[in-house]
Length: 171
Ligand code: FES
Image (tube, rainbow, N blue to C red; front, side, top):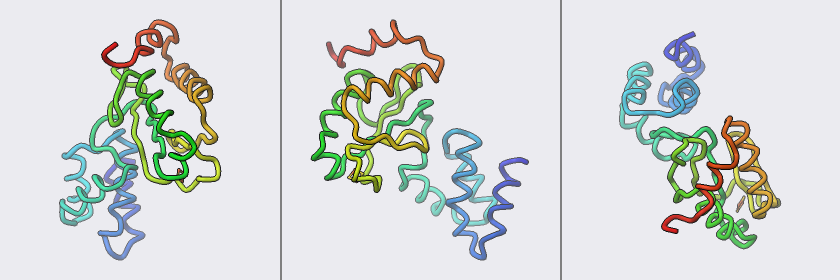
């Protein structure tokens, strides 16, 4: 089934096509990995809605990506509970070992790093979402173990890439 057909099928469940924009964005992102301008315009055309409505939703929610992202999107919560439990130090560590800043993607395109508002899992703060999974009670050791596992999943060779990425930017 094409993206258009999937969107049309989903949109048929909504009396107001504007309500179908969110599911349409999810379908398109699953198909393409991210949501560049031409895809947003195609969604607007399929649904027969204003393009600005599609752009507004696609750029408002951290769930959607208008730029290409890495194989794994690390979304670290920096809201109050997580911050009080050490998320700032975890963020600095992530930026150092990945050699990227928040909002950037690693050169090997394995990781994209973002901070997000409360993930609704404060009981296991500090928390990070990766894809559909939540990882809680994080500390630097758990972060490092998770990165190693994700790198292995991405088919990356742990060693040379790690060593190169281990130095903080500018060092
Ligand atoms: S403040 Fe981080 S999950 Fe709620």
